[in-house]
Amino acid sequence: MTLPLAFLACTGKDTKPGGNVATPTATPAQTPSTSRLMIDAERAFEHVRKQVEFGPRPAGSAELARTREYLVSELKSYGLNVTLDEWQATTPVGERRMANVTAELPGESGDLILLTSHYDTKLFKEFRFVGANDGASSTGTLLEMARAMAGAGQKPRFTYRFIFFDGEEAFCEEWEECRNPDGPDNTYGSRRYVQQLREKKELERVRAMICLDMIGYKNLRLGRDEDMSTRWLIDEVWQTAQDLGYGNQFVDEIEGVGGDDHEPFLKAGIEALDIIQLSTYEYWHKPEDTLDKISPQSLKIVGDVVLASLPRIEQRLLAKSARPAS
Image 1 (cartoon, rainbow, N blue to C red):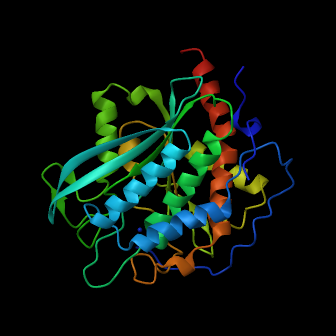
Image 2: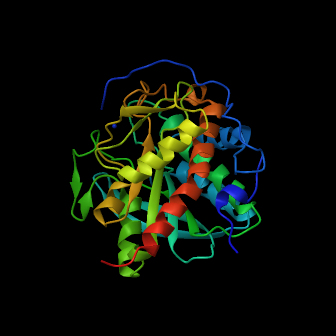
């Protein structure tokens, strides 16, 4: 019998800036300590710090290559099957070598739930941009989520893939300012991943996708991406946050995203969710997006909420599969 994740183990983008309420120490609503997976806040923060130490990490850079080596090494150390997909991308600034990193945790079912982050930073020539929140925070949290899930000791119901996308950021200043012969100047890695799913006839295997982006700010305030994301996925994650006592961080407000790595999946008919703090992060695409803006507790809140929401998401997907065809 396969147990839901909740019973597996416990392991220790242009909008106005807004509120300024500091994220509290993570003290969720009372839940038995053995009933759900949790991440280690300091481990996640160390992953963020390591990325920032590499420096600016735009797609095709030596710094991003070193980051990629770090990701692969960590994921392999968790016992996961890691694959690297490298390709040459045409961009407004010339050819760039890119690579997606995927780690797979086999489940009882071959159907897939994708947990994702981009790990590149935006290219700026006029200042040094290390992307502590925009790129590093979600990547560090996803790494720690992978460790927690891999160490749970039993197979989850679904097969999980932890995907680190290259080339999410546009090379031109604005998101839709430039285009390439084969598509937009953004979401290079996620668009390639969806195309490969299509070519391998694996699109139908993907049941849900969750994208993490900019989730580490010490004044954490995550709104609902209702313009693009799948509504029931939003509801399940935000209800989980409420149940765990994080209603002040996962707020009942609209977050306008405009575009992110979940978009290619939505266009392919895959239900997807973007968890992002954009409109209330005043250091977005600024040189001040540095490590001092990141809180280990914010990383933990997001990681714990997503992990705790997965059993609900699994149940919802299983119920949909069990419905008779009309």
